[in-house]
Image (cartoon, rainbow, N blue to C red; front, side):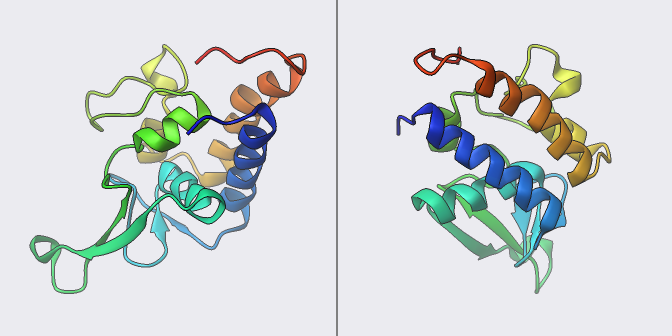
Length: 147
């Protein structure tokens, strides 16, 4: 799923807005669970579902208790789906404990790690604005952002 600069900016801005305004509570350890708990990348997946129809569903997980369900996006429950990473031109997180950082070469800045270490959605929205949106906005109209 190739995306234009304008499409990527639209998704990134909607992601930031959704992180700041809800309706999701912050989850850790997976993209999400139950109806409204999502990690920061789970919120991104919800945005991609609303904008581009990335498949999503909640599946009951009996091993987690009778009322627990996991959010699954395009077959993934604890990693950014390839379709989403290709759209934004970032590398997907593969495993929460030993993942490559999708946004930087420095694993300490990986948004998933920050989410799971207690950074708030507001903190993460600020990071997205600074490190993903601003660089994309400053590129000349025809320039491509390295992916």
